[in-house]
Length: 116
Image (cartoon, rainbow, N blue to C red):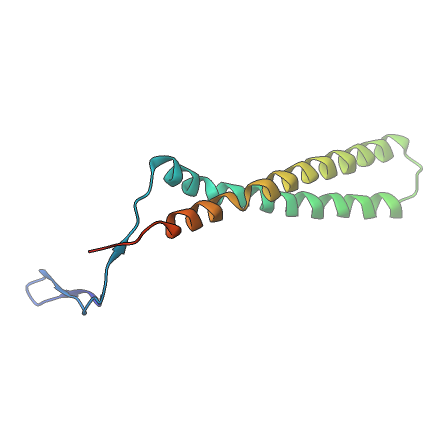
């Protein structure tokens, strides 16, 4: 498709190239819902990367600091532990669900193609 062209009268005219073949696949509603949810799975991965980076930074600060203030040391230790645990949970959720949408897409493509 070459797109929409504007003429002098400001009315759109369409120019379409030759289409060799149109193929469509039948998709069930639950499959479409699963594919629509797929980008949210990458949100888990992005949050995991952020939490892992932040927890690593806090861990470096914790190991590099002097242990003069016990309250600060305890707070930093709790932050590091909690962020690593949440990050591990998010990573496991992402690893479990990342192939679900790809599996459904492969399932749809394996069905008999219907040519128009």
